[in-house]
Image 1 (cartoon, rainbow, N blue to C red):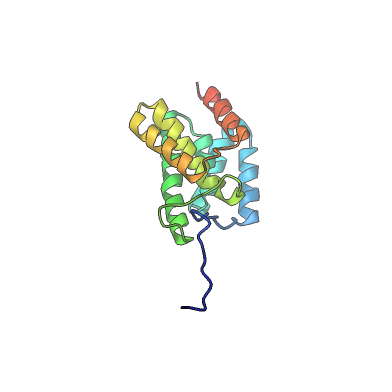
Image 2: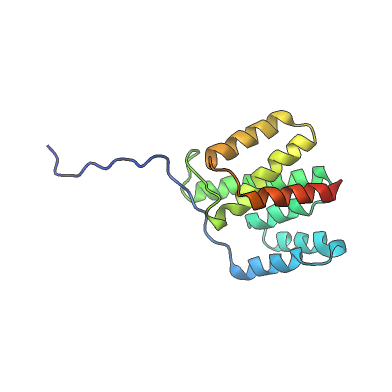
Length: 157
């Protein structure tokens, strides 16, 4: 018999992405606060300088000029997010929760992709994204995130 203690799993692992550089987050916040005419270009410039920052892709999706442009930005954020998750130990299963602010760029990209896929008629993709979001965090997105998406969708019409 072994003297090693038995370790039980506490369920699925949770992955938390690293925090982004505060200077870049500040620059993105400033770009998002720009006047509506120049906001898209300001956010796009931050993305061009920091293409690995998931919050940037989610923000570009948020300020996209039409559903297809929004879909494309969210899709890039989603795929870059999968790469970042894998680089931080995620192996295709386990939680990626909204409670960790550093996960928001990925999760907002996935939520945006789900919503824009539905808008452009990609219903099967919208369903897959919704299922994946539920698997990553069964509690779902916070109400304020849903409210932000609803208000930005209203602005697009």
